[in-house]
Image 1 (cartoon, one colour):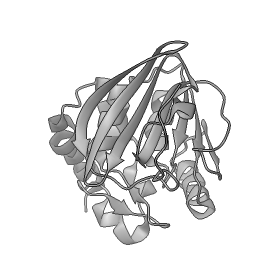
Image 2 (cartoon, one colour):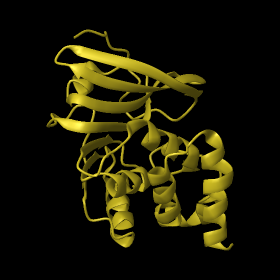
Image 3 (spheres, rainbow, N blue to C red):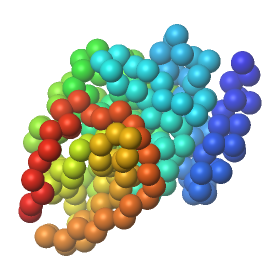
Image 4 (tube, rainbow, N blue to C red):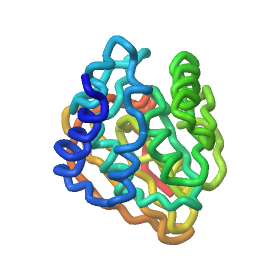
Length: 215
């Protein structure tokens, strides 16, 4: 496999055609070495439009969903980012390249350590991977929040960790009908939501339980 050709085709045939036109996002997807974040047994699928199996029943999101999320979040290079669900570290790498710092949480120690090694190999130095449940951990305030797996319903405690003007990308619902959603904090007690597209992805561990929505 010619990796550079495959990477070019991934950007041009999958990502760009899925309404990702932000030049910064396209450049990052073309530069971050996705093959570094794929398990060795699935390396030939690194640039394919499929979810790739990881350990603990988790999967890598497809390249086009990663790109659409990055575009929707509109990350600036001065912004601090919270990521819940590090996985193999690929989305962490995209966000780290676009933003200032990434604080990432992965409930699986095995995946967390793999992600650290993958990020080191890709020379990503502004991402801190923590091995704990990001849905439960008390966080600081962030400009951007990225949830890399599905959640059954909105998470008010997580949304409250957005700074005013901050954005959160999450995929809400139950398989097979889930909605990619952008949530923006507009005021101390104000949020707006935008449904971006329908999809179906693996849920975050611990995110299956229904919660009441209240602020």
